[in-house]
View (cartoon, helix red, strand yellow):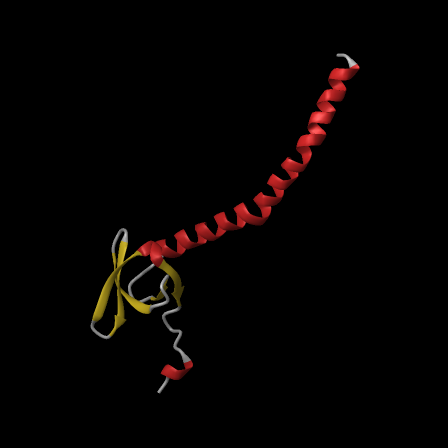
Length: 104
């Protein structure tokens, strides 16, 4: 190998090093945490069961009355049941959790 070829490779590597570092930084700060949150959400949706209190993506709070493959029936008021896509459930609250102002 000639010295110019070796110097050219080193120069090319030095030029691409900032791009490589930026990609690694993006992976650890953006991509990896997003994948972790998506996995946790999939697990939460998979473990959904009747009686769970859920928060929908639009902010409504309801109680799950029926669970199907892709949808769940949620009671948002007494006698008012709505069918929602399971992916639109943003949070599953504990069944025993009761708000302080709901206690009598």
